[in-house]
Each structure stands twice: as C-alpha cells, then as structure tokens.
Length: 310
Image (cartoon, rainbow, N blue to C red):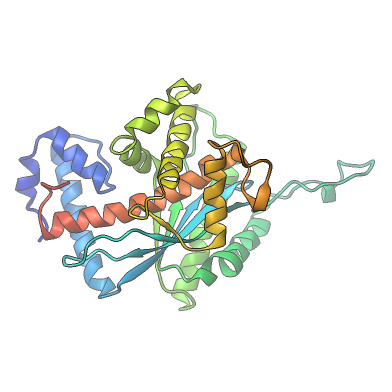
C-alpha cells in the first residue's frame, strides 16, 4: 500500500529528500510539495505494477544520447516482487556508436554540398528509424530509457547548435518508438531519464571512494565523469556478480576497456576494446539503466513495506 500523504509529510525534509533520490524522484521544492510528489509517483508506480502483470524479467535498453558518441547498454533485470530477492542484471549488449560522422572527402572543393555533413531533420528521421529498427529493437527491450537532454550547458545563456541537434535526435527516437508502439510493431514502455537524478543517486550514496579518486581531476563536471567511470571500473575489477553479470563477448570486451584504464598490460585496441577517451558515455548508459532498476526496487519496497528501509 502506498504510504499515506500525512506520513510522508511527517518525515523530516532531509529524510524525505533521501527517499526521493533513492526512488528517482525530483527532490527539489518545499516539504509539502515534495511529499505530494513522492506520494503521487508511488501511486503511479503501484498502478503500473498491476498493468505489467506477472512478468519475471524486464529487458532494459538504456541510451546515453549523442551523435558522434551514442552509447547504449541492454541488460536483463528480474522484475522486483514482494517474495523474490533482487537479482543482479545480466548485460547482453554494451557499446557506443556514431549515428553520423563527418564525411571524409579528399578533393579540391571541400566546400561542395556533398562534402559536408547534413543535419537536416529528414536525414535524422532516417537515422532514428534505422538505429531503432535495425540495431536496438531486435534485442526486444521491454523498457527503453532515453537520457533527457538539457537545452543549455553550464548555465550559459546561449543554446549551442550541437545541443539543438542532439535534442532533435532525442525527440525523433521518442517519436519512432511511439509510432511503432501505436502500430503494434513493438510493445514496451519508454522513459525519459534526467542525468540530474542519476548522478546524485550513485555519487551521493555508493561512490564516496570514487569521488575521492576523482578529486584531483579538473572541473566539477570532469570530476563527476571520472567518478562514474571509476565506480564502474571498481565493480568490474571486483568481478562481483552480485552487482552485474556479463553475458556476451561484446559486454566482456567493453568491460575490458574499463579495466585497461587501470592495467597497463593491455595496449592499443586489442581484441576490439573501446578507446579510453569516451568511457564516460559507456559508464553513463550503464549507470542510468542500473539506477532505474534500483529505483523500481526501492519504489516496490516503499509501496509493499515502508519508506523506512530506503
């Protein structure tokens, strides 16, 4: 049963904020507003559980948005229930790709239209459809998580042109998925996930050591990226299958790319491992998916037991 609104309002604000963070709920605002938001979200979750029925496993597709460096992770996660213990997710796909790349033209006239990359909506509509139809949906995900893009970076007044392009592509992914669902060609749910909810969940709860390791890295944004990469690397180095399991050669190769950042015995791009420069995208898509799965577990705990254990 969903906790009564009065019982949520009786919690101290700091405790209520922690409950919100651990359930993936926006934790901003005054206490009365936050309590109502948590209550409403738990009610929606309870209703969604009835709609899902008795599925035992969810296949989650988690997408970290980008054009040059779009990363995605697909894993099977046991659906939480009141009676069965939470089991670790099994990763079946984990990689990054370029949706579009600047054309490589060697000629005298590099200013010709054919030598320039096109960002026309019609071109990106095709990119969105083919990415989903040919690469992602054949894995049959039941839950699709798409990183919610910001309009501005670092609080700046200007909106960067590249940000507009990624936002356009994000919207097209949602549109294609909705169209396929309405036509009965794909059955699943789509969720827009804000990085502002994912980062505090991991770096504020489980990653104190990772934050310390990353403390010597430049800006705050760079520290957060390094902390998230280090957290994933720590899990993989420990080989703890209670956290996650690697089920395919692709997932194992990506994991090796994280470990190669710490262990100098792997050189170059041996065995198809990923370049070190963009591990943060791969870490982000994994952490986004795992955070969402944890949020579902925590919401179930709040609904079937209480918020005390969160």
